[in-house]
Image 1: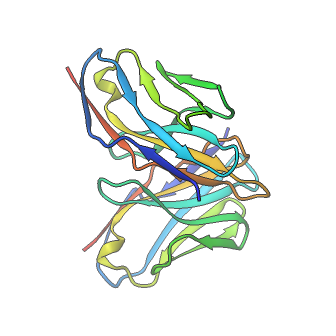
Image 2: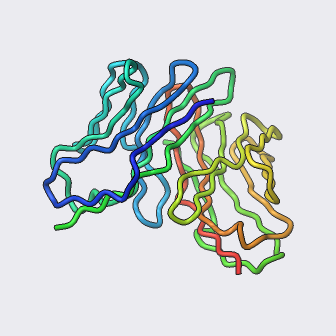
Length: 114
Length: 112
């Protein structure tokens, strides 16, 4: 079956530091890949997505590139802010004929300190 | 535009009491609908999904059930809550192969 593996957290960074959160996946076909962000007490919000190999998703300074050869979708940001503190989830979506199965990683908590 | 409504936002219930959480989606037709649970400090666990009215699939057997009485309404229920049912419940919808999941704001359930 499909699976998503994320790096263990929590990740603690100083403001303006470079961020990388690793994500690798296994899938039987050609999934779409997503990063979601969850702020305390809230639901998940889509951060960025990529639907095919070599696509780069980007939003709010975050980027991730769909690497089929390494089955990876690592999240990066050049300079984090305190407001980026949240839990980040990597996910893949695959399916056809109606049901879209979405598989999530376990989430990585990011804490940015001033 | 599409919106998703989930209520209540918080709920405290005694063990053995019933549960009903409701989720409605506006602005789209025939979405896939999902219920997830997030235990404290843990990832997302898919509980139920639905591809159409009256069509419910369960991913994890437990004392919860789901129903979809209308195209854009998804209900999570229990006849008797357990302590282990405590958690953060999230409803979500999706339409196409390439579209993301859209989540509600969640319900924080505490079973005492």
